[in-house]
Length: 563
Image (cartoon, rainbow, N blue to C red; front, side, top):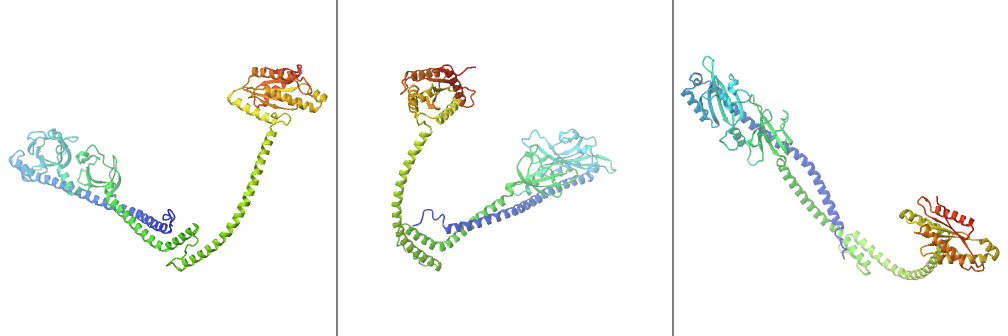
């Protein structure tokens, strides 16, 4: 019969768990090391890809800016702009053709040297002052008016009161226009819609990649996307040698991001591409899960194989254990034969068979010896029981004798001291008062001398009986010395103690002592005081009071002196 829970503690299961656990631990250790390597590699690959993407976007923006800039420069040098009247039809038609040739031009026009618009295509009225247009103002004069002898470009926002949501945003390009003699005629200026930047980003950004792209100006202000303008901070520029970074983004969150610069003169834009850290490492997380699953499956297969292998070794041992258990349960004729076992197991089986036969033979011998021993133990146990009863009685008698006076059967001085200590502690704890009466038989030596010591003993027993009859049930009565007695009166003040003391004195005086007749007592009375450090202090005061009673004529009660 298999023992309960034997499978959980079996050799085969433990061996399978050991090998499986070692394999799994090794796999986890390898996975941790591989995870770090893969994490670094994935971050590096992702970062380099994002750096390449940011560089591609920056390059495309830079190329477009350069083309538009060059286009304006070349256009300003064509004969039409050099010779034709600035407000003539030829120049206006040239402006219209140029605007239609590039879909992102929102406006293109000519302003004279005073800043007045003289010809335009795209919505600005001729005759307006370019310098007074709010969307031309950038800290000082209009860019193509304030620095009229250089071609410039500038990114800025143009509020559009009629538009809902995002305002129109432009990149301005401008170039001076000169006549054949080199004299300044005016300025050719354009507004290119910001949409061309968004289209460049959209064309190069992989679909559903989770990547975000930001355009940041030289002052760290976000230019794109619009929903982030004024609401999000850009990270500090990276060192020139660093192409990507994995870390916190200003405002919260961890991101993998890369940046590239638009090198066009005067702009110093940064193109930043970012991706949430968890999304950037999504491939690593998937690989980590796959490796974990593979490790668990491999561990399970290894455990199953080890379990089957261990079973072929442990099964014969389990059969031997089962036979031994049946023999132990009383089945003395159990078969120890193991079919198909190895030589070592057959030798073990034969040895256990011989051992069982020898043990069974000795079992009978031990049963006979045990029966004899049980009878001896029973006899000895009874004798010990009688001895224990006798010892308990003797101990009780000794305890009685140790705390009682042999002559009067009253408590002795040792018991009185113990009771005084206990009552003193209770007084300190609760404040309940107690009193001490110290009594002495008057002229007791004369009794012994006149009537003999036996008569004196009978007188002492008579006084002890009188004290017990006169005292209250709660009072403690003890023989304190030869002819001295002590009464401890719990929860009794001086007045109550004086009443009881007088009662005892009168009872002794009025009684007839054996052989002697009339006998008297002198009594000293004292009560506990808060200043008493030890219970003996009250006894000493009672003893002084007793001395005064003796000196005052005996057969009287004397209380302790008061301050």
